[in-house]
Length: 418
Image (cartoon, rainbow, N blue to C red; front, side):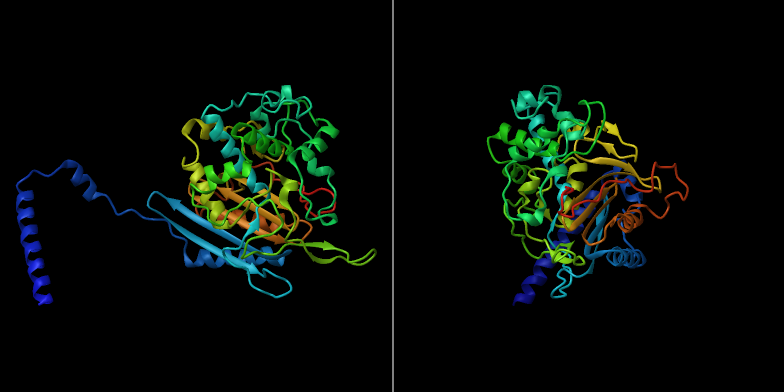
């Protein structure tokens, strides 16, 4: 009985379709329909099997050159779809030998800064503040010389403020200490500016401690709540959080420092995965995954996070340093050796070295549990491989350097990176 019922329904549907076709054939064809029918089927992006193998080999080289583990994701994007490669290499835990999870959580260090910048720019876009408002107007009495430093200078590292992390006690001396942002700014105030505001560019973590404090002044809430509600939750970044204590969510890729177990001994790997991140308040506090970081940047560049005016302001480069880094309001611009212009940010925190690099149609993020003194050369080899398309010119316009040079600190013994 059921079979006959389905057969009867099918017969009615066929008859109705025939009538519809008959009716439609009496109408003249729509020119737009003809143009659409003649167009070729869209081609979504595709990462070939050969490219996936090459990416994995390069990631293995990153680990071989001085990281205990690494995880990376490349996404090719166009209007017709996305194709993604996710690779892991090395171990997540030196003691157990556990492999790295593709969804491993990581302290993303200064990759946090564009999240904070986007949140603050949303507030500016809604009229809560202006980019040319001064720190003295926004945070009275907090910063020496704040009457000459604008919010635009803070977000673009053109404020001239001393980077407080250059004069901090070692992380391992008191890893679970909770820091207040006012304490961090006080370190910078004690040193004075490194140049007059707006006359140069120099990366300073103090800027983003202040950006977080401005968010709190404008909203009356902890900056982490504002970033979560305005950025993390709307984009569905379920692996992303802003912890205020030492515990890391799982799965986690452990971080290590090379520290001597006693005076005069050779350095050995010392697990530094868990420490209180408030010593990087607002500047390097976020925990995330490679997939979530790529999703944030794609949403940002595609206009899901900021309106057109605020996105244009965010991507307005204020200064370019000797290595070719362009300082915009959060993101940094750079031209790869193959001639491709990218938006990017790097991150550096004890035990970890991170990169996120983005073009019009490619998103690439790499997390390293680094153990080498300078893990940058193998990482940049992989960035170039991932971001340069096969038809990129072999001899493009020259860039200032093969890759931007910046201090790779984060040993926990003094300078902390961030």
